[in-house]
Image 1 (cartoon, rainbow, N blue to C red):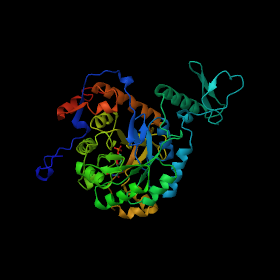
Image 2: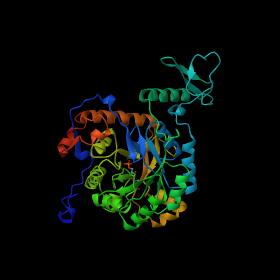
Image 3: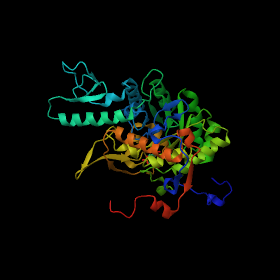
Image 4: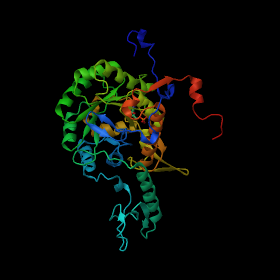
Length: 432
Ligand code: XMP
């Protein structure tokens, strides 16, 4: 941000649609792009996506599914701390194999020369593997067998394409993050004790002296990584790190989320792309460039947005909407006409705040005004499909940028597009 501009009015808040990736000389083919990265100083993932700590996005099922696929989830805090700790323990106790997501069946006699992915579940179908790949599908004689067969086929085809490297700790257990208010040190301690691998400080405006003083105490109380946010400006990052130098990651973006109404209600915003650039600039000034991972949070709609965030300096991308429609998100499938949807809401929406007031005494510190909306998003099926499309799209984008991995993407270039350019670079003049 410009320091000396009158009231900051010269400051330009660029967002994803304001820029395009400038093509650069590439030394690798897109499928060879390496997406391995960090979400915090000590948390490594093979795919740079993190699901938001929101009560319609991440509970144990989403966290487990994403970690099995090489990404990671952050369990929301809109529940009593004991329940959040229990959910962390569930994830830590699950099999890390991505194939655990595939419906399973007991192998009948006579098929012992094949290896079965999984055994022993009454799910109705299974994928049979032999030398050289899939040999077939087994279906149990049940009225709903077709459903399970479809699901087994669907999941296994994606898994075979992605061949994910699960996100696991030193003991081979799935890695899971958990959200915490900067004021809730007791919750932070309990989550660490329950096996959480990292914490994500979850407050709309961390750049506040009370929140920062409490954060400074919190980071000293736990030994796991703490990602701090949300922040938008360079000053916010500098003030955070001067008070809590132990912070192991930065969650950047104010009011860009698809369900955010902060920009409307309070008139305050730093779009995610700009917030990431501000953090990168702050780290550069501190001589810490690349040493504290930046997570771009809010407004990411597709792989192109994710790529822009990464080129701007992010190590990983957090998303709510992109994952909210998945089978693994909390909440029911809702039929409207002939389409399926899932609920999605901001954590500062009326419904989410009512739930929080009921379970969390630290919500007293929270504002009473609604800064989020509630609605529906299309049901997207198992999250593997979304993650596959995001990862493949991101590889293609980095291929254009001339980057072979996340770190080299930080040297790639973005350019501003004009409003007419922005229209032209999307499909146009065709009836879709
Ligand atoms: P997307 O665009 O991925 O954004 O759906 C998810 C991010 O939005 C933030 N968030 C909120 N921001 N009011 C806000 O202003 C809210 O009620 C709200 N709930 C979530 C959060 O950073 C999340 O990761």
